Image (cartoon, rainbow, N blue to C red; front, side, top):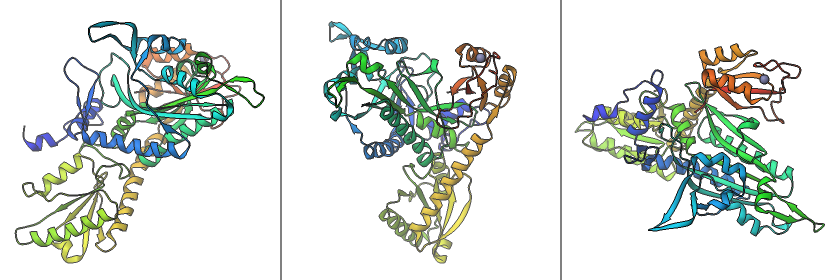
Length: 488
Ligand SMILES: [Zn+2]
């Protein structure tokens, strides 16, 4: 296979989304599939890992500014620990991978490879919390978990092992724990909207789809261009059920023993899946400047007699940008022509390209090309570091606007079962409908077109509860607004 073929994306995002996605992930150098016999596992290459690090850096800084400390707990959890919270056992039972042997010895007790870590973190929180003065207690771990799903592998969206962070906190009161739940949800929203250029909707999961053992599961949902929703991060108010199962109690000011209110919240590398799916196109990856490993690539264009002056000029600009903290790559490879370089950096998603030839040198300018739409502008060489920041802002705004347009034009209303089915069938996206709260009404939609209720609005916001209306599916009185969608 020639380099040109290897560089080109051959599938169409619009008509062949799944294969297109897999091709972008592979050809832009983000990930490979795992070894044969290990379906569901992927190898994250340095470019893919750099994106995960950007997500980590953003969130880690937000967490630390709001009282969270990082810690690390064992990969393996004794079965008896898992069993202490029965909803966790039931909820995760079909997906747990077990360690049964250590060397040649069969273990007395099976050890679960963590599917989530409440069951091993909570017992230690119980040891660390004695009085109300020990609260709030907040720990986070950056780790991987394993959930043995037997579905087709989709890098970053669906893998048996995935990277994530899981935060776990304990508080004195319900209100404190609820505030914590919302703080983390807002930080997830900020990651998407301020770093990944993806607007999200906030809501709660329906009762029957909560995190096992949780009182309330809140979620941010992102709408992909193919009309499917991505559960983009979840934050759970756990009530006192985990505290009761694991004895996380504290003595209050009156010296009475009380159960703590706990939360947990997690965001995984699915955020990268949403990022790739949202912005990329038939030329390859598209990244916002906020998290791109290279924000600018400089491609010098020279002939033998202009090589020296063009390269000098380009190097000067690269140095100046680097000093200003811009992530810049000067592609001065001799063996590649400019056209090849353009294609390669487009495939890799670099948001801004500088083209510099003898004319630019003579005029004291730089030709700037925006990755998302190919728009070309000329920037003065002087104050280039300031000028490029404006270009970054413009590229970010373009990406955000396109994603916002997709979201805003794809929330529709429906008031009957057939209308829900027809609207999702025809357009995808979200369909809002009054709902009685009964799972069986969701089942009817699920059975027909594999759409589900991805969220209901949170009580304290967008609470346009359909008072006096009837459930679109069964006709009983509605007390919630359900957002139906197909989902990743
Ligand atoms: Zn109903």
